[in-house]
Image 1: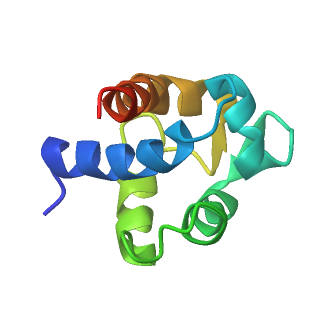
Image 2 (image 1 turned 45 degrees about the horizontal axis):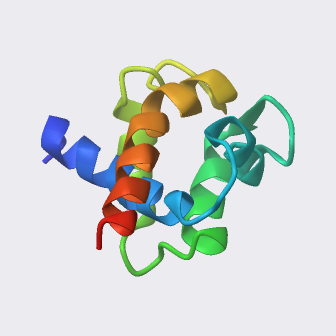
Length: 102
């Protein structure tokens, strides 16, 4: 089940929601961390499901799989701003471009 394509799909679903916000990717991380440089995986998951309203698109189990298996996150307790930017920046840009081109 967990493979590169599946992982990219999860990233794109989150990035599509985030791409609707007209703020820099670095500042976007504040949604998850309340303005600090890192957040727990639980906080990240909660914000994805509730604040970004992704409950219809993602399950808690899928987010757990993603957060515990992504190469940049698997050995960490927290998600930090740099990892967030590294993981989501390109996908957010792609989502924004796709929206503009529709």
